[in-house]
Length: 255
Image (cartoon, rainbow, N blue to C red):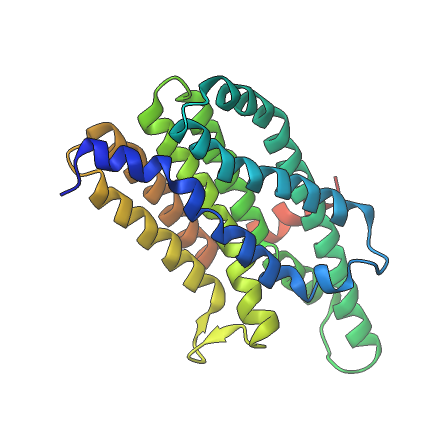
């Protein structure tokens, strides 16, 4: 079982491990963003990328500032996150709205070309259904960042909630690797690719729960984080087919 000192070192070194997010983001978004960077894009796409890049950079740098005892810089960047994360959430919502209408337009074009025979009601339902992933990842990030800020004066729960927030990078990146590089939405022809990302997130939190054995505050924060992820994953699997979900998404995208 890791000692308290060893566990502290693991968290202080998380910045090095978080570097993998850069690779995942580059590979995951290469075909849809980096390879066509000079092509025309809606301004919200570049704005969202810039905000996410800042957030990713902060996630990498902040643990290393603690490791190298740059506490004042760490606190200053922490205060900057009060601006960066709301911008990430706002631009994520804007991107989700853009994606909703782009997906809806593609379905309508297929209907017009005679490729499919969806009714307008079915198009609305399918468009809302597709918004599940971005909505839940936005909610997870908002919840975990809020919890991290609430516990900002207590290093142990604060760092665990930041870890949980950082894991929201896995879904948008890993899912795209399967979809755009392997041309599949299903693993083993049965499992949607997003559940692989869910499994990575859950297993990571379970691993850190083990590493925090003997640290009640750390285990409590990680247990809460895992529970929030699991509840969200269950809701993702169940509510997207409901009329409630369709009506909620339709209202939100038309605000």
